[in-house]
Amino acid sequence: MRCISTASYAVIINGRRGKLFQPTRGLRQGDPLSPFLFLICNEGLSSLMRLAKNEGLWKGVKMSKRGLEITHLLFADDCMMFGEATERGAMVLKDILKEYESCSGQRVNFSKSTIFYSSNTTEDKKVEVSSLLGVRISKNPEK
Image (cartoon, rainbow, N blue to C red; front, side, top):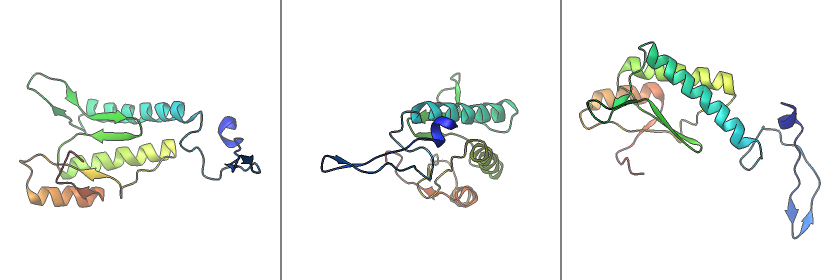
């Protein structure tokens, strides 16, 4: 915490260094510690997802009949989570994200979050799960 709370910055404008200042909102992109802290936080999120799966609370998806079950994928600062489109599944995911937020101090930006559904998910289920999670429904998974 000392490494994080004692950091200071200076901005170079027109080749001149300005006054030092301390951030008020924690680490930001570009901080030398950011990648390491991000990996530690992601390990915490992965542990919560594994625990929910092992306890039978969360079910991922399989790409083939005998393939591995995928519950989540992490890419740099993005996360994709895979599960069943049910009320129970949405509530379990919401609980996992609340626990993650409380432990890590990071917050999920639901206005930037999107949910994709398989083609066999009914419109009623899509609306129910999306409203429980507070995320937008995306029609185009390529974006």
